[in-house]
Image: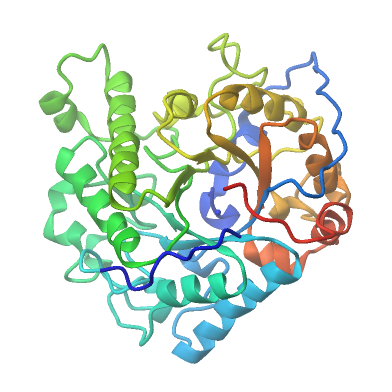
Length: 425
């Protein structure tokens, strides 16, 4: 029985955190080679004030990046901090909050499958004394906000020591499910029992709460780490017959996860959306003529074994929110190249396109000159308005929305969000 009835009115990586992503969030920046033959994008057109659009804000919980501000706060202090983010979204005239509720194979609700998240109390498995997801849904809806529940399918821990997990953690009960890689622990996507379990764990939240969407970020198979091997050879030997190579088998595993989850969500709660926010480059055109005219150092199809374009074409997801975390004019992965590419990818599919925006880069002294300009993100929104397939934007992340280091979010709101808007439902 769901804890709340589905409401009748209609109002996210990096995905995720710069501090946690490390090279992943900026892999294209760091490893790409400039293209050198820039192709101009179509300029942004006038905005339709009545047009439905997503205006989202990610709130990351892994490693306490956004919320809670630190582990071990009282239930009242945690609740107040969460409410403050929802109120900030309303003040910025946003209409969706993408709350990370399963950061590392643990949960921000009383899950029968996985332990309470360590980010709440500092002790994985310890009851925080309240229900963060249930509260988030109720309080978001009371403010006219959608609540997209953000899950990470396979990450188990940001370390490689299983003994640091709670004693009842499924990864300790089933050590054969887990592989260390790049200083982290992951569930092995090549095992059918793993795929079934992680789906069951996530669907528990769909069954029990009135969430508006299931949201995944960019982590499927882990980002490649130089000199290290993801040791799934035994699973490949057992299940890889009939595939031309391990890469094709890995992509098929990720495809199965996405397709099965899509089917199960729709069977359980047809009104719940299923959205994915991948790294922004599917493939470079130098690798595949269907790819974008980019030279990114990471390609989701080849490096994460995630056929993001294929999921769109097959209609397995309701929306895609690529993390286009580069400035207009960035040679290796130009925002003005990728927006039209993704617009064409979704055209005619019925899949909504939202653009993930790197607010966290605005004003960061470690970033390029383009990111020191408070108007950079506003130009993104204006540019994207020239492409009818773009149905909104999501900003990473909550802490950056609040701090707004150089007023980039203020500029977006002043230029583009003068009134509230409803999400595209």
